[in-house]
Length: 209
Image (cartoon, rainbow, N blue to C red; front, side, top):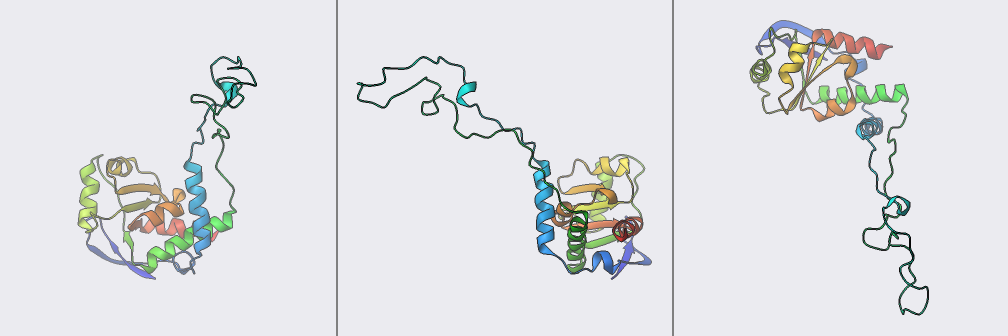
């Protein structure tokens, strides 16, 4: 798939870049995408939720009333889960939600997501992106020049660039990552995928391994 290369002003440079079919033209696998997104979201969970059981509640352990003859149910201490303020039965406990996926499956999921973006013509290729200073206005001017100000954008750079990253950080609909940080969730969550010619080569080399 051949795409015109634009500059940061939104104008065509006259150059074209070939998006490799092995990365941007595969047959999408929806189940691989589902598993990779599920793992990504699971890994974001802290898993620090916790409720107190009856042995952790502060309170007396004396028997509330005699076992028989009251006309009511028998009762132990006030810390029983049956009473207001007592411990919780089978409450949440700290746990790790992460799980393992094979590298080949994750690579297939990411190539599938990129192929969906290419199929829907939601990929914009830029010659390069660099800012002289850290200003949110710089990134706003970039998306305005490309006529995608109202879209969620994911900019993929070949390497870390603090000026670009910090210029986009205050914008809710903008995210900047490096090619090595690319994940299926971010690709699918973005309306437009912004790549540079260098990041296209980096992705091709990464998935060719």
